[in-house]
Image 1: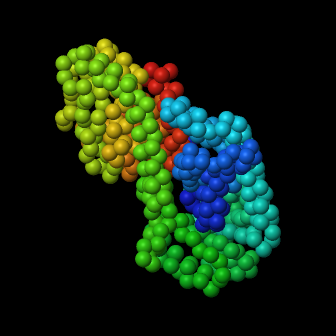
Image 2: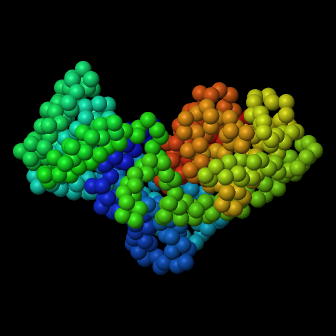
Image 3: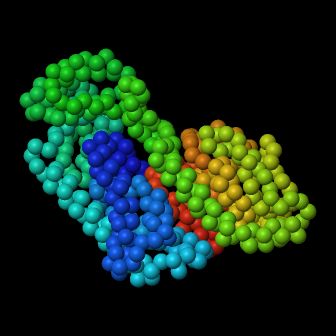
Amino acid sequence: MFEDRSYKRTFYSAPQSVTSLVAAFLEPSLTVGTFLFANWWIEQRLTRPELTLCLLVFALTFPGRNRFRDNFFDASVDILISWLTLLGLLMFCGSATRSFEFFDEQALIIWAVATTPLQILAVWIGKKLLQRHSSRPDTRRTAIVIGGGALGVKVSRALDGIDDRSIDFLGYFDDRADKRLHEKAALNRLGGLNDVATFVRERAVREVFITLPLGSQPRIVELLERLQGTTASLFFVPDVFGISIIQGRLQDMNGVPVVGICETPFTGTNQLVKRISDVVLSSIILIVTSPLLLVLAIGVKLSSPGPVVFKQRRNGLDGDEIIVYKFRSMTTQDNGSVVKQATRNDARLTPFGAFIRRTSLDELPQFVNVLQGRMSIVGPRPHAVAHNEEYRRLIKAYMVRHKVKPGVTGWAQVNGYRGETDTLEKMQARVEYDLEYLRNWSIALDLQIIMRTVRVAFFERHAY
């Protein structure tokens, strides 16, 4: 699960803004730069195919992930997996379009071999520079937490978890008795609220994190008035962890600070990158699979009376109703207020329909939905409108999964939650995976899901 790491990134993102900007351009620039260098090394002149590949790779890898504060081994493995996933996708596209002949084989081999070591080296250098910067006495910061409850301890752990160790956490302040505090806070309490301002001035504390509940507003106001006589940076941490935080961030709305706790990851550049990758990949897939689509259409038509393509009402982005296409696999077309999920040995399935559902070939027409802009290649799978009306009342944060376009495949599907969800627990697990995808989206994660989907579709038979 991603939950703890995403909390750290969301909670303490300000000092990482410069490194995040560098990381956003570092991975795509290194990837493209290595390809250009490989061609220069063998004295291969750059032509239109090479430049087109550079643009495609940059679009697929931007923005790069900030790995400077990750464990070095984990970062190295992540770089390798991301690169192999991207290579696999490019090889598939090159084979499907027969475009390998436009590139020099030696340049491609150098590119494939050299890119990962160079990216790992860049991350290692970046980590060393950050560690060197944080080791300087003038860059270290001391911090305290006001509030000894569970939230205060969560904040202190997030501070301790910052890899460059540039923050020295000193302890907690709280007026409550020890038995009302978290065990860790009780052991590390430095005093009560009346002691905070004096302690901050005498110890030159740089950062103060206030985690008191909103019900303590008068005490918070009084505390802030005292602390304004110091030079410490003040942060208020609202207790919002009882709800699902999706892309939490602080925004400026015409001079008014606004804390976003549930927002789509696809805004600005991310939205453009996501749409470009959807259009490019879905176009290639539809062109390559066009003979197969014709064969499947004939098979559906001959298997039983009825239309070739089944159109079903689903909820899309922001819960708006959309029409989703599938090859018809059943003798009935449930699309009303009650929709029964397909089950193993379902009597409604035709023999040919059972085959295309088991291999997920019935989903291929949804790439047309992707081109239309109704769906994305990767995202939470769309459920029937009737199912949404049922589960939105039973599962907490169920409708949050509609903050993005539904996908042909998704994070839940490649983690074992594909096909029938015959229990509430299975649906809850699927929704949690969908929310994880929203919290942690990246192009690299999309590519990983696409590659894993191919394996799941042909080697794991969970769908009916």
